[in-house]
Structures are given as structure tokens and as C-alpha cells.
Length: 123
Ligand code: 5GP
Ligand code: ZN
View 1 (cartoon, rainbow, N blue to C red):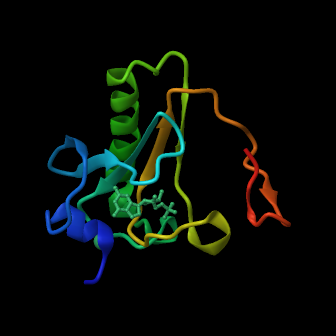
View 2 (view 1 turned 120 degrees about the vertical axis):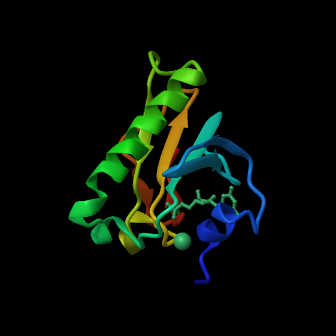
């Protein structure tokens, strides 16, 4: 399957891997939007959040827990951080293998307004 994150999982494409276990890997985003911007990716290929099956519930829970562990490891669990699953076009999903974004290390804006003129998120 022609999937960027499957290729990273199979070590066909390099990535800055910061966590790995039998169910997931986590690596730094190539275009970071915060001092720490990591992606927690299941070894199982699932296209979008819409495709999470009943059998995947523990896996997805594990992804969230791993994000929390990385936040603790990096020292911003108490100051806080954000975890995000983008889904499909309006969600801004560009890689169709589910991944949990972990953003931390600075105060983050909310909500993520979109500027219709600039066609990009407003900081
Ligand atoms: P999405 O937009 O699908 O929610 O998130 C995909 C993320 O993957 C983006 O934040 C993008 O910067 C990141 N990304 C895309 N290609 C690569 C790559 O080759 N390596 C890494 N480490 N991150 C990537
Ligand atoms: Zn994949």
C-alpha cells in the first residue's frame, strides 16, 4: 500500500522516532507547529477516525496514553499540551493513516480559527 506512514513504520523512509512499542510508534513532525510536535501512529493501517472499528478501541486508547507519556517525558505534562486527530478535508487531514498530533512546549491558541482570505490558520 502506498502510505507514507506505513513506509515510516517499515523503516523504508527515515523519521526522528521518539517512542516505539508493539502497537505504535511516535516521531517528530517534519513541519513542527510547536516546540514539540510529535505524531503517534498505530502499526495497524487505519485510513481515518471514521474507520476505527470496535476492535481498535484499546489501540486508540493506547495512542492517547502514549501521547501523555511523551508529554511527561518532555516535561510539559503539567503546563499542558494538545492532542489532535484531524479527519478528512475539513479537518485538514493530509496523511490517510490515523495519527495523533501531540503539540506542546508553548501556550497554544484556541480555537483554531481559519482565515478565509489568507487561506491559512490564524496564529
Ligand atoms: P495531518 O495533516 O494528516 O493531520 O498530519 C500529517 C502530518 O504529517 C503533518 O503535520 C505533516 O507535517 C507531517 N508529515 C508529512 N510528511 C511527513 C514526513 O515525511 N515525515 C514526518 N516526520 N512528518 C511528515
Ligand atoms: Zn499506512
